[in-house]
Amino acid sequence: MTQSGSTYNAEARPGDPRPAAPPRPARVVRKQAPVLRGGPRVALVTGASSGIGAAIARRFAEGDGAGRGEGEWQLLLSGRDRDGLEKTAAGTTARILPADLAAPDGPRLLAESALRVAGQIDLLVAGAGIGWAGPFVSMPHSAIDRLLSVDLNATLHLVRAVLPSMVAAGHGRVVLLGSVAGMVGVREEAVYSAAKAAVAAFAEALRQELRGTGTGVTHVVPAAVDTAFFERRGAPYQRSWPCPVPAGEVADVVWDAVRHGREDAYVPSWLHLPGRVRGVAPGLYRRLLHRFG
Image (cartoon, rainbow, N blue to C red; front, side, top):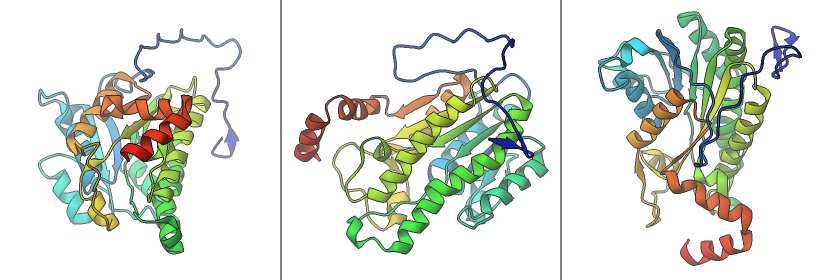
């Protein structure tokens, strides 16, 4: 990975003091140093014009519930819908940065704009995403390209554009919004599942590269979330189980994960189980899937 044309080694150099690894809890969630260390921090939240991204932005504006959110975070909110961004930012000191991350230079231009406005990005929440539902054989090629452009490529390019400043500063955190579809694969959401599986693998690989830099990676895996996501993709959520969770619940989990340096978070918390069953007993998993959907 390069920074201004030079390479940096994500591992600690020989002779550098290495902090003792924190004990891992019994839960699947892993921990790393939290990003909060006193004083206002800058958070860039994408997909903030609606849904999960908007809920996350409002949660960080709220802060710890004691009215200190505005003092802890300077919020930069991005999305394609300016009106939606203004609605999310209403009543806060958040700055809005409208951007189309699907455009070829969209991620780079957004990162440059955010750094120009705030000087530093301490937290990136990559929340922009779209969906598509239906049999893969009938999915238009243009829809494949657009979904991968927004849900995967834009995320990679935005992280790439923001990350060098975090590494140079010696602290920061990247929050990547995944999906249970990326952990187990969901029928009639093949490309969405593939994109989110790639995000999960990217989070794990990047986490290893960034060891010793002070920059952490959090992968958040929600189940179905009660937002307009399903309406926009053109197919409503029709499964009886699991029931969609409120976007505010996902936002609470993101807030908690950032404050405590968690590397993985599931919403709801039991959601790690399907992936484990699939990994340990794929045949059993598929039989259960065929029976219960």
